Structure formats: C-alpha cells, structure tokens
Picture 1: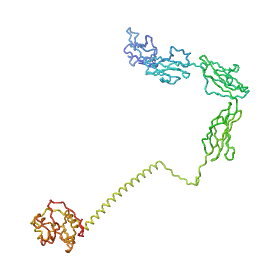
Picture 2 (picture 1 turned 60 degrees about the horizontal axis):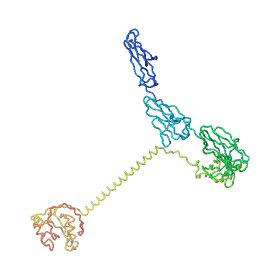
Picture 3 (picture 1 turned 90 degrees about the horizontal axis):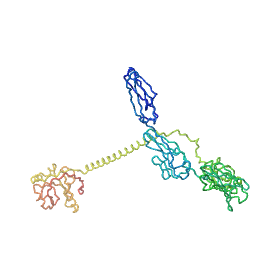
Picture 4 (picture 1 turned 180 degrees about the horizontal axis):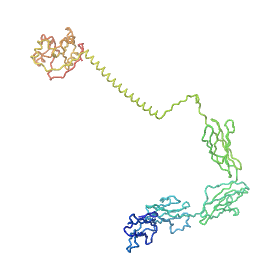
Length: 583
C-alpha cells in the first residue's frame, strides 16, 4: 500500500523492440504526463519513471503502464496495478441532531458525535476542550463512549471549543472545532466593593457589574432601609455593557441603607441581586492582630490586619520610638498594614504605634512592642591577633588518616594476641620447671608390676639377700610397731595402690633404713622365697617378717596378701625423705 501525500517514483521497463517502444502511464484511462524516459546503452531496454503523489481519492483506482511501437502494427503491451492508499484519519465533529447550538442553556445535557474516515481504521479517538484532553468522569458529568461525548448539565465553564482526534498507523487527524455557547442569566461578579461610606450631601457613584450570556442586559435598582423600600429613579441609572452605575446622594439619616441591583437578559432575570450598603462615612477602625517577625540586629518587620475603613479608602501609618527616651526612629505609610523598619540599633527596645487614616480622620493607634537582637559576644582574642592557620584538611588526608588509624588498631590487636600467647607459654614453662625441680628433689620412679614369682625364684631371692634388688626388686615400705592406728590404716590404704622400686644404693633407701626406732626401718621384696601365696596370705604375722624369712632383714607390714589380678600399668610414685608423708 501507498501512503497519501507521499512522493513515489514508479518504474516501467520495455525490452526488445526495434525501434524503441514508447512507454506511457494511465490512471483509470486518464494519461499521466509527469514521466521521464531513459534508454540502456545497448538500446535494447527503455525505462519510464513516473513521479507519483497519491491522494486518498486514488484508493481503488487502476494505475497502468503501456508500451507500444508506432512503426509496427503490433499489439500494445500493458501492465496495471490497483492502488491501495492509506491515509491519516479525517474527522468531523457534529452536535447532537436534537440540539440547537444557538439555544443551549445552563443545565442542559449536550452530546457530540465524531465522524471518522481513515485507512487503516482508527484504534483510538480522543476528545479535547480548549486544547486540553477530556477524560471519562461520570461524577463530573463527562461520559465518553466509542466516538461520542456526552456532557450532563453543562455550566458556563463548559463553554468553549471542542474537537475530536482519531489515531491510526498513518498518524492522527483532528476535527474541526465546535464552539459550545452556553447561555445563562446574569449573576453578580465577585470581589466587588460591598460597603460605601458616604457623607451627607455627598454624591456617590455605586457600580453594579454582572456576568451574563448574552450580554444584552437591563438593570433595575431599589433602595431599602429600616422604614421603607423604593425603586431608584431611572434618571439616576446609566448602563455600559454588563455594568450599571447609579448616582446616589444621601441628604438625611433615612437615606442610609441598602441598594439592590437586578439585571436580566433573554435567558432570564438575575435570581440573587447585588447588594451594596450605604453608610455614613467616618473614621476607620483601628488595626488588629499585629505581629513582629524577621527580627535582626538592625531591623524588624511588622504586619497587622486592617479594620473597617469607615466607608472610605484608607491608608496605614507606623511610628517607631525608643522605649525609654521616646525618640522617633521611623515613620512610614503604606496602603496595606505591612511595614519593614530598618536602620535600628542592636539590642534596643522599641515601641511601634500603628494607625489607619481616611479623609474623615484617623483611627486610634495600636501600640506594639518590638526589640532588635543583640550583637554576638566578642572573643578575648581579636581576629587580627589570632595566628592564621594555613592548614586545610583535604579529603585525601582524611582517607590517609583513616587507613593509618585502621593499621594501628590492627597492630594493637596482633600485639595483644601475641602477648597473651607468650604469657601462656611462659606459664607452661614455669610449671614444667617446677615439676622438674620437684622430681629432682623428691624422686620419681616408674615401676612395672610383674607377675608373681614362682616359689623357687622367691627362695633364690631370699638366699641371695639384697643383691637382686638392683635388678628389679619390688620394695614396700614397712611401718614400725610404734605407728599410730590411724596412720597405719592410711598407710595400708595408700600402699594397696602403689609399689616402690628401690635399689640398694638408693639415697632414699639409706634414709629410710636408719636405726631401729624409725618408722620405716627397711624395704622388703614381694618375692615370697618359695612359699605359695595362699599360705603366705593365711600366715599370721606377729612380730614382723623375720619369723617367716629369717635373715632377710626386712618386714612385711601387710596382714593379708591380695590375690593376684594380673599385671598392672607402670605407676609413678613420688616420695619424700620424711617417712610419715606418702604422696
């Protein structure tokens, strides 16, 4: 398909005829002239170029190219093409058929239809009011359905230009603008002076302005007071467009009251009149709600709310005096009671007097206290006496400082950990040294417990005396008869768990084998000299072991021999030279 409004170059080629063929272009049987022909170098091919700008009216028409040789009576060759033209939407907006565009009044329901013609078809239709997009909002009386717009209960704000816009792949097309003219009866314009102060025998012009459509309006005035109501003479009324001016001059006290203004047009009469109060002119009322703000060391601002102006234009004045001396510092006048007082001394107290004034006089003044801020306290060292510091803390220096601080913290943590480990190792070494010294002082021997010896072996050991103690003797210390009963029992209990191996040349043996009066006069081997263990255990020991083993020179303090329970693990026994302490 072709797009309407775009320029296209269409080519038609003819090959082989002699002489060269004549190529022409046709649209629905009508010849097109905007063509250009070219011939190939060998003269065998003729090319015709048509510069063609289609329109939407060309949609469905036939475009053809004909080649013929006038010198040869031969059949004309023709190639045709049915045009398919695409174009942007063409839209038109119409008011509802049942509505009169010249008599649409406020409160009427209005609807529009958007007629769209487009190829391809539109995929969206928008509505606009004075160039602004309208959205569907039933609560505000705006209803959009397909290609229709409904406005429920139109008001004067609904007036203006309405358009619809259709969108397809070729672009968008906006319709003609339809101006909706909403008619309404006159109403008073807002923000107009409602109170007029007029002195006796003073002429006052009271203006009544209304808003109306159509603007051709007529006015009527009336005067009301507490005693009567009367129409104002038409000779005192003048009209200019939608405004009316009445000239009024009070002469007595009864001439002060209320003037009412009505306006009407072809739509109807004004429902609520415009009201203007005529009062005796006088001095204005005093201001109120005064506030001091934006205070500094040399200025402050003052704002007040204005009172009744007495029916006449008023202006406002302020006098600022020192609180103690009452010297005048400022005197300002404004049309609104907002003042900015400057060029004051720091830390001073002031009194501001505010009053309003019109041609009838001035109001009672209002006193407002105010004060300026104090200067900041001076330092002991002046700025000129202080040494200037040229050092500036740059971002790079802050980064470097942070990195150094982090490294210092890490180093402290590592040093603390190493110190703790060193202290722990030093404690271990001290304990090891103390244990070594204790072993060197008291002695420590590891004794492997052997199986009980045979009777023959025991007999040999007894006969050989103490010579075999050097090899592997089992020595048990013997308590003497003078040992106390409790110490003896404790000695028996500990001896059941330990065995001491001692050689004949041991210094401990020589210490324990002192005179007959010692607690441990000697050691005795566990070899029984050939006696069976059950006989040895059943034998009553009275007066030592010498009766059992004469000549052996040792005693066995155990009363009963325990039965053999197999080999035991080596046991470490620490002993001291004092015979009564066994560890």
